[in-house]
Image (cartoon, rainbow, N blue to C red; front, side, top):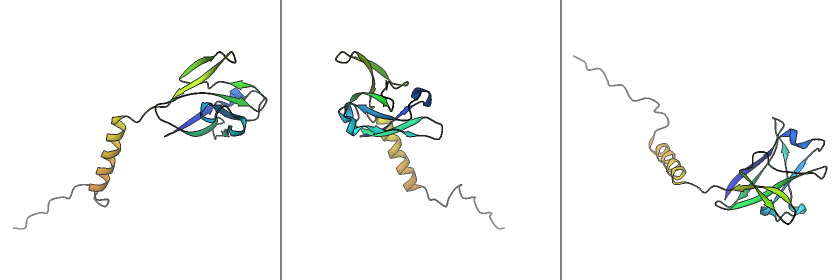
Length: 127
């Protein structure tokens, strides 16, 4: 599972005061709609745990009843049943590079003493 954050610019709200996220991941069920929270920069956002490697269609439903797409969607797909375009996300799978980087960080943390920030200086020889 991957945590995916969906965002909607404040400008997309128009006269609406809020929005919920609906899509394949919650069966487009209004009762399972995910509320977006206002962020410090004014955008609205919600995070969802989605299965890696799968694709999901989704849209935002504004409080005034207007449907809007994700302005930054990876793709848009036509939904013939409703005659609309839905936003589409393909959840990335964890790559080998990400796994190697994670393992390397753990190994480095395990073998590097925390108090040793720079190599020890050689001692001066006494004559």
